[in-house]
Amino acid sequence: ALLEKALREVQSGRPTVVLVTAEPGAGKSRLCHEFVERARGVALHYARALSHGRMLPFHVMVALARSLFAVGEGASPSDVRDAVSRGLATAPPDPIALDFWLDLLAVAHR
Image (cartoon, rainbow, N blue to C red; front, side, top):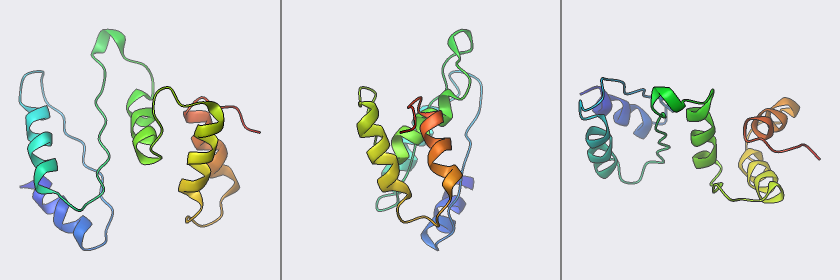
């Protein structure tokens, strides 16, 4: 029900972030996959946390940033810079934003 409410908010023009958490084996992945099927026509960005023993700081944020800017794991630094610049082109000018996203994606600034 909460995911359906979030979907209605997004469809009415209000960007929404939903965090799904539960114990391993509770069905989080299945719930998310089924929701994605119902949310056709809406831009969804999905990230999955690593298990505790291998967790990296900000791993989920990096995965979401890669999804948001359509940057693959093996993208060159130049491709990452270009993708982030294109993604931010429609946003209000913010000199800090580009540096933030490039730092998060471990790409040196020009």
